[in-house]
Length: 478
Picture 1 (tube, one colour):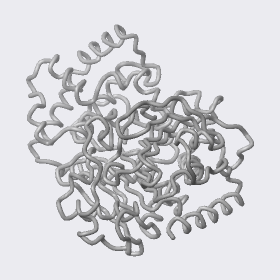
Picture 2 (tube, helix red, strand yellow):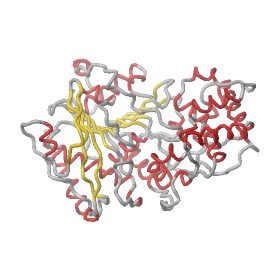
Picture 3 (cartoon, one colour):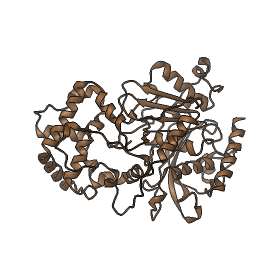
Picture 4 (cartoon, one colour):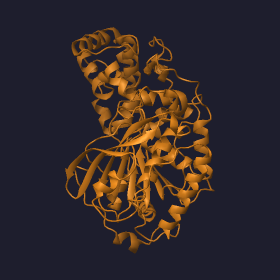
């Protein structure tokens, strides 16, 4: 019944989107027999890049032809990379995206392991090599990316016709949410990890409150002291930075100079600490009388000097473009740095996007629309945040009119928060939701009976496959 309903709903969505000029997906492979590789390559627009061995699965890296503009599909296409970790056509499928590039080695998200299912992973449009040539950057927006996911799902649903769950962490969690907002009937559930929800770039008081209260006063003062000392010794540190960059062949065309890049490195220090470090690591921060070598090494370990060069930032141009046009970006007050900053506004995304790429005026309505939909119309959504994560200062929130939606915070967790880190009762509720949406236990809209959920066996842990939902990225990126 659920499969039949999915086909009806998907047909309605296709008819509706076709009416607004959205490109429909290629031919759908119908359920049947035959080698999975052959069935995948029978999908119109699908081509094989490589197949890699992995115990217990088949793993494919594929290219799928997508329209550059889903509203005007006749205006050109590009190849978007996807990967498929194939378990069985009789298992549910998890649709994963990091919101960035695609890893071409096999890995499993947490929902994939919990459901012992298949995983389809998508590279976000405009991340290399999934970038149209020539690149029309005006076609990089959340609706176009959601439509990429919709076409991939539509193309593969005949192969994987059991339940589907969308997931992702950080920008991937944001992406999973946007996909559900624009195509609410594709997925049976959505699990979004540590997904920020910056609805108003002119009001960042939530982030100021976070940094005024996170951890202990001793830890906050220690980190603020390190940050201030970095600016006090700016000239020494910048000289080392510049020398090191020259030796490595790194350049600073985006920011304009090593001094300007250094200001962003040091400004990101406290944010980067709480994004990825444990609270106990606060004691390892240098004392005020630490040597300049120690201070430099600490900045490098926490913020990372390499990222703020052209070579480090260029791979993330698509993120910065969207941050400056739709997603928004946080800024934090730093009264303890009064009189030490030289470049007001240096953290604006425009400075991280090459000048030759035009950026339209910021769309103040895009995130407000997503936020309103999540609060008032969403269903089968699960959000997991970390208590110590600065990106969680402005989270998605759920309203009274949503259905079967859940919002949990993992105590003491940072930007790596997941279901396994939740308190026991919440972990059980979250796991039940994932299993219900995957069609593995009875679904009556409420928590699964303990006997039903306990009877399901997740895939065994595998250190090679089970990577964190959010890999460590440079600070300032969700």
